[in-house]
Length: 70
Image (cartoon, rainbow, N blue to C red; front, side, top):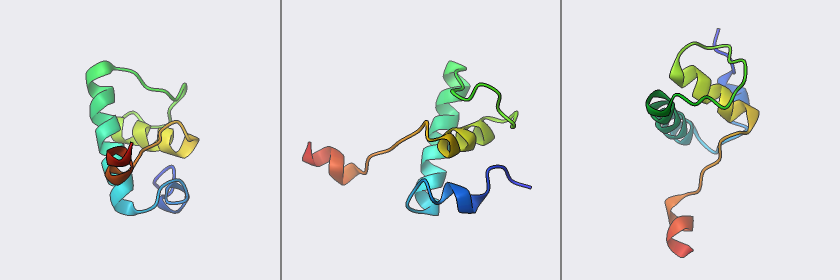
């Protein structure tokens, strides 16, 4: 069983595609820097830890259009 569930994660982000992008970028960053933001993660893998961070509200993102407007 996936923890956290996809349904719960999609309340944090706008689409499955955004979820995959944010989680994969954070997982790659965690792998290089060895810095998990969740204190006691359920998952041992980087992608699982990234999903837990999204669920906890520790990750945010901005759309490329918003960045170009700044």
